[in-house]
Length: 236
Ligand SMILES: C[S@@+](CC[C@H](N)C(=O)[O-])C[C@H]1O[C@@H](n2cnc3c(N)ncnc32)[C@H](O)[C@@H]1O
Image 1 (cartoon, rainbow, N blue to C red):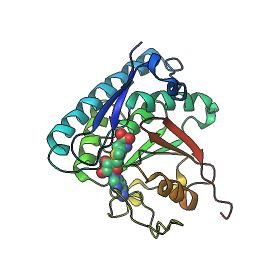
Image 2: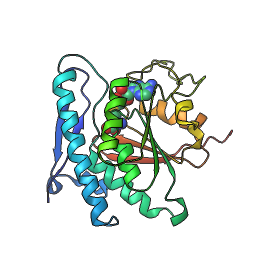
Image 3: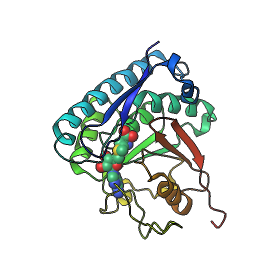
Image 4: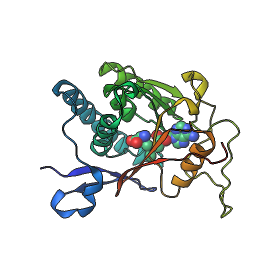
């Protein structure tokens, strides 16, 4: 059985690639390796997408991130894919067309995966060139995932942590992307993000204040795998 691989964000220089060998990683239990629950044709499409998405990131890492900082670091696509397959399997039939949003969608791999698994999938990315790449990738893989250029931060949102440091880390500022998709953040049932160190509380706060009341937030952690939560605010 092959190990699970991915990239750990590194602020300076290339991303660090990691491989977790199953026999050497007790934490692998949280990764929930699920190979069933998708038909062979869908599995083949997902595998082809993951392969191309991994090549795209390797190239981006060499050609862009080796020269200057860029916040795009790819998640472990295998880990995210397995989690989405499992999530979908837990949804009742009528909810399988749930709306899925990838925050900071970069080359769009995760949103395209979600589309292949039956979600109505969208991605928002602040770097216009990556949005073009994601749209091309979706076309090549016959995916209906839609991508908007701009920011996933909802209008009027301010990060005000109790500790007082409201800096946004690697999260960029840009025009609001939701109008281009025709949906607000609270129209999505599942929201996925891959935060850099320290940005997780802000993403949870955004969902608490602006997410749908029953929405799931999936946050990728390069070591622990995918963390799933509901961030419903008691005041909303
Ligand atoms: C760590 S990467 C995650 C890439 C991809 N979602 C994945 O999981 O493989 C974060 C991405 O968010 C984008 N980004 C940063 N700030 C953003 C913002 N305010 N709105 C939309 N995208 C943003 C970056 O350009 C980068 O591509």
